[in-house]
Length: 184
Image (tube, rainbow, N blue to C red):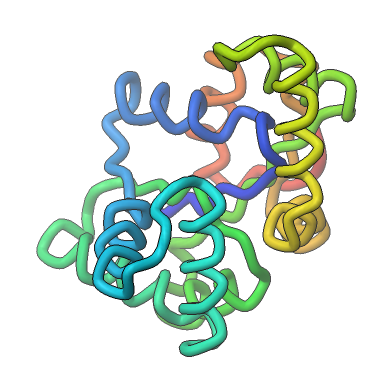
């Protein structure tokens, strides 16, 4: 099984991924190290926004296929394991995964009300509240973040993370391998 995880900033993607790895033995498909390597080779920034720009550039160059190809490389020889990619950002990336991996793919979208996401974003930051709020709204304006928030419409399962504790979200995600669909 390969879980493709989408959702807005602070929706719980990283936390859910860590629980799936620690509790259920999932392996993570990592795009960040790859993006950092490419950004550095092109003398570009490797912060959050720089990596978003790099991912957008690669999407333009490959029409999103780079993510599925990277996953294929990382999974080689270990296809029998359960995998998670916590940063799917475009519908055409999902299309490439479905074409390459077929029935193994489960697309799960995490969401929550804006006030919940803003509070979660602020709580995990070390800067003052005003600076965190500004960073949250700057991040939400990013085209990639805007698009990622719309991916619930093509997801197999959508989970409102404001209604569950993180362990329960991960439990639901792990259970989704049986074919659960809908909105929770």
